[in-house]
Image 1: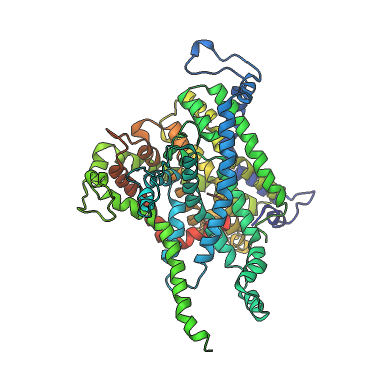
Image 2: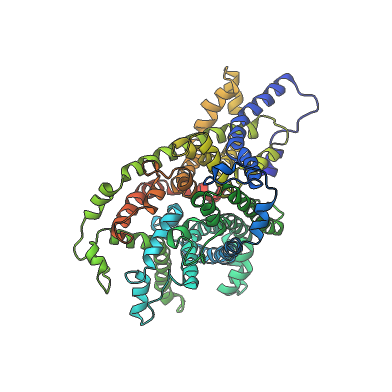
Length: 311
Length: 280
């Protein structure tokens, strides 16, 4: 399903519309109105508010200052704000590590799940459960896993004589631990998308390859991966869009610490606004974050001009 | 032939191993939380850690309900998710129907615009939504969450519904309209019942989306009695350190309802996710 196929569905409107067609069209706009009204209230009006607040001084803890216009001061402040750059770098690192990570792990899970099982539900539920689990819950669960003394991970490693590792108190390990949690939580959605893709590959292709003497690895590289490309692209795009907004799992596991080593842009915006009550600066950061997300997503979209779902 | 025979049981074993890995990957973390939730605090302090509880107890589950108003968290989560799902399905169904049937100019473009706006990263809107809800005095109320949540699920609902509506033959509605139905009547009496599976699939996806949302709930509804489950459990304050046995019990209480929902409707959920899926 795509926007392009929709355009073909109803016959092209003739320059002169019959009264019936005109009333149908009017009804169409009426039925669209609630959706666009909702979008206006929840998205469009807040965008305007966001832009105007970002160029004003607006601090809830200093109401006597009013909300004077200060131009691009907040943006200038952001550019020389080390914490802004640190959280931007962390966000980019989360994208660069967890998006391919989730796709690789998800591909592995999809290949494992794409077998002729006699009982299907344990496998399918095994993929659905991490997807349905709230991100913060995944964060809490992994925080318990990575606990220094009682955590399952350190105790399991201790069994082999390794560690204990300060998972949540050392900047590098904390970043690794949050990445592991994010990959676990998000790879199952990727696996579901890729599994659906795997099931559309005709069996005859593999049979033909077998006759030609192609090995399993060759079949995977020559048939599975190219046929799966559209599904992988869909997964990459959705995963990237969500990775830019990484918040819940680091919040639940480390609350951005130790120091600011796992703090993402979204977390910094949240802290600036809700904890420090600096709405003006928070808005400017949010605008900058939107720019980052546009750059990141168009980067992917440029790779895939064609509608990936049409395949 | 001689090669193929001994390989057969081996292959079966590999398939079982594959199933085991996928299932374990999904279930083990939750299983570990379940085991933690029936251990006593003293058992959890012991080293080396135990895997199975030495003396299983339900005390943590009792304390989940007495220490914090988790029944309110459950109720807030449930009410907000149901109401926002209903709102989302209603507006998405009307829009999807208009786009599929009603001779709008450039429906594909309208759909793209709608999706592009609805997919605007809500995280950048946290500040102005906080401001707006604050000035409307809607902070810590259900509507503050219901409205944004309806938008959160609008892309997936609209996509799923458009694809289902496209499969309904035009003739059925025409027949209904010849029998005296209006357009909206035909939508309500013919199209919606015929696409009930699609509407239902979209509703489940929207429900899970809302049930899971954290950032907006944390920002717009942080008062204890108005918290949803994710916020309530994450901000759980222990007397000493993080009270892991109680947190685990709370997590199990929160996970069970949605797990049952997706277990019962797993086919629909998988179908909906992979046709119009857009959630990480």
